[in-house]
Length: 198
Ligand SMILES: [Zn+2]
Image: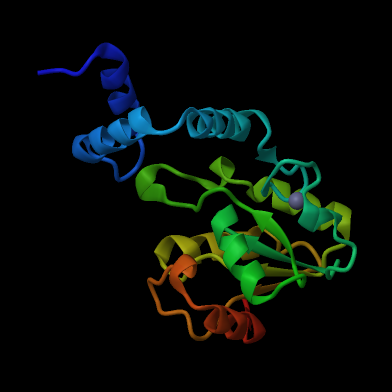
């Protein structure tokens, strides 16, 4: 038994979202079906807006609606150091524990040979270019403390060796195999303060 085609199509589209099975998708579809029109219009506009208005900052590759992003435009931040993270969500976590302190570089991925992700698939070359053009003297690598995060940190240390730049790695407090997104702000803060030279 199938629902009318427009509802089936909506259910199909919703099941493509992460963590949404057919049962939840069906529940959501019927919620939307009975929702007031203003909400539906607003929801559809916000979906279109994230595609039309959100892009990557041309400097740090953070997601933004203005380029350069608000963080790159912030003159009060330390210009000499840069904090390297895997994803924009990790940057948000670090930013909430150390507001207004760092500038960032978002890699958009992590080196993972098993999944065929190499250095050229993430924004490492762009990082090297920034070191040269922006006069950066310290690179703080804040990738997760797991195999991929460590591999990426060591690769970054290796390719930046020829340059006069100190490479540090966030340290104590974050458990091996842990994920930055789930660590409390105080631990993140202390792991940044206690960063170690790579
Ligand atoms: Zn930026």
